[in-house]
Length: 177
Image (cartoon, helix red, strand yellow):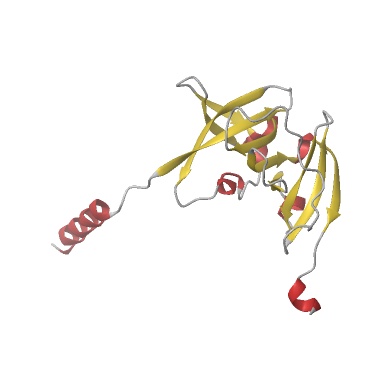
């Protein structure tokens, strides 16, 4: 009899749990082969886009499910084949816009300001969390320093990098007086 009561309580608990809602994010994927894939990824509403790439030990085996732009097809894209993933405001972008390459005030505390040159000579500049993630993981998150950029957040696959250069780190102003 006690087992029946326990099962009934569990059923009631399951019915009371709220459904997890998701939010679509626009992304542009640059594949190492030069191909560009535009589409959407779904994440829980309470998750930041960077959560898609957290805890990616063995990322070569991981894939990203992307709803292809202009199609109902969902593509499973291997992280191993990705050069970078851009979370963007718009798929159109502005091809005539020149990216800001000089960040006058330096990065915020706890960030490294870096320049990344890919094997295909594309250059990306942005802020990286000052942690071991960008050293130990298969890829890392870059936040563009140019606030006017179409890109909101970028995942970079380390396999696609030719060179990495630290441009600066700003110490906390609180300690300097």
